[in-house]
Amino acid sequence: MMAHDLRNPLAAILGKTEFINSLVERHAGELQLTQKVQSSSEDIVSTVERMDRLIASCLKQASDDATKLQIEMSDFPLARASDIAVSLNGAAAFAKSITINYLPPSDIIVHGDEDRLTEAMDNLINNAIKYSNVGQSIHVEARNLKNGTEISVRDYGLGLTPQDRLKAFRNFQRLSAQPTAGETSTGLGLAIVKAIIDAHNGQIQVKSKGKGFGATFTIVLPHR
Image 1 (tube, rainbow, N blue to C red):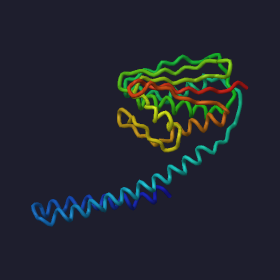
Image 2 (image 1 turned 90 degrees about the vertical axis):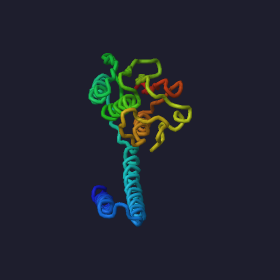
Image 3 (image 1 turned 120 degrees about the vertical axis):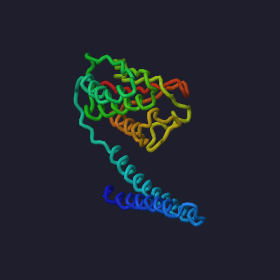
Image 4 (image 1 turned 135 degrees about the vertical axis):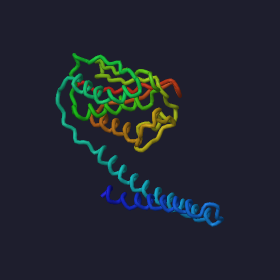
């Protein structure tokens, strides 16, 4: 449905663009050209805005679905999930010459949904790469504590303002920092992470000293 609904506005945008180009070629220098180009440009803006509303509606549905989690709990080695999450982001890190400092937590067993926790770590690592500059590094660590298992992802990138920290885990929240290499962001990743951790009766928090000082996202999963 989404693909179908977007085809017509895309065709309209293409048609209007071709129309503008033909006007410029045929009527260069004519006073009426400005009015015709302006009218077509307004049509393009209107069409793009309609597409944006369609996409927003689709993402809202995706967000609602993502937060209605079906959790299948079992005991599994945390390293199995974290290895996959790190591996999934290897290419993105390589493209920006970012080093992922990671020591597999070989002795840690957790109780949870392996696929969902892999997804949560994948999102955090991916975010760390997006908001880090070329040549920087990130750290992925895990350890057992008295109150649970702690998993942290730390970067030295763009950081978060106090306002960013307050709204970081809400749906469709665009933070003040922008991805450093033009990567896309839907504003859903951290909301999905929080939904996953909440479903495990865990906690997630973020710390940052402010813009330019990086950020640390920490998950705490309760012991069984």
